[in-house]
Length: 154
Length: 154
DNA sequence: ATAATCCGCACCAGTTCGGTCCCCTATCGG
DNA sequence: CCGATAGGGGACCGAACTGGTGCGGATTAT
Ligand code: FES
Ligand code: FES
Image (cartoon, rainbow over all chains, first blue to last red; front, side, top):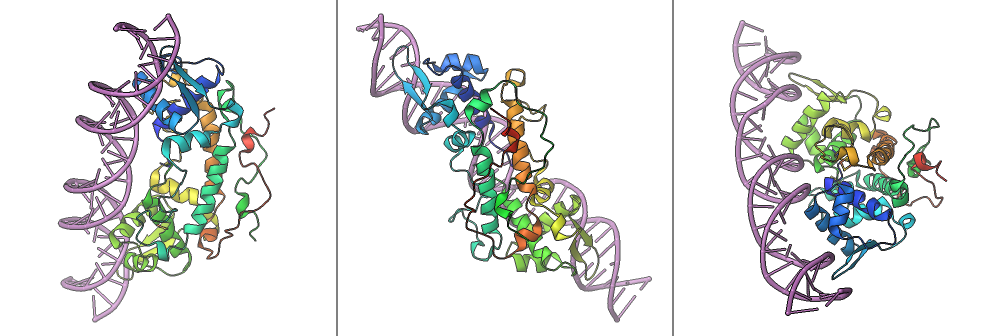
């Protein structure tokens, strides 16, 4: 289903929760309560996010988590990468993926372009935008071609 | 990993193989040979593609498969939809997805926008473009913002 | 010292994915 | 009319991954 893991969805939720309180040091339980995600899951997510360098942790009593950078400089692509590894929509875009027919695959290079487009789509949205309560749910009428890499075709 | 199933990758490969011979009626074994995909897998894929209305089948001796429409009118989004169901990058973007915190989720509407962007990215590439042997591997220098839905922010 | 809190890893159940197999139906050639 | 060819619809299985839980250890404020 072209799915992003549900964990990642929760992850962004936690991140936006964190983004609403940039200064405070929130512990895992507090974050779980605010984001309405199960506490153990939040803990697991935060560990991964720390490892990914998106949040910084403070240990000990009154410890907790803060965003490593400003919410405007963190994109959902960052969050996804931290939680699910490098963004690669095709399993065998990277070499060594275990695909037995790499040599004869004619469309691998084209897939990589789509890959790039998706990556850009995810990179275009920052945490600050995700945290904004009301999104523009009405789609813009003007058509535009997101896949500019193919714009030069004829 | 934001992954597309490997089956889908194979599917596009088969479709492009089919697109190279628009008139002929190729059977499953022939397609397997040309695309270098395991024969049973190809058969399974073709069944799904037929059900999705992307290819038409001819039964009986000398039967086989043809594209249902011109290669220029079939997008990879069509292929993905046929093989993996509706494109939804977030598991709980659709209601009833089993997410326990739908009510309090603040970012669901924003995810849907990203969803839309990804869908457009996939819709922008046709089979004909995938079949083209040489893709423009050099990224275009000009920057552009694929996620136009967020363009109106301030 | 004690309590609070994060850290790392191991572990489990459920689901999904890739792949294979079998039998039925439809069509063509003789 | 009959048999060979080829697709159609499933069931089926092993492997891998996912979401989720648990526990012992390290770190810090009081
Ligand atoms: S490289 Fe694996 S299918 Fe194209
Ligand atoms: S709706 Fe499930 S996490 Fe947002």
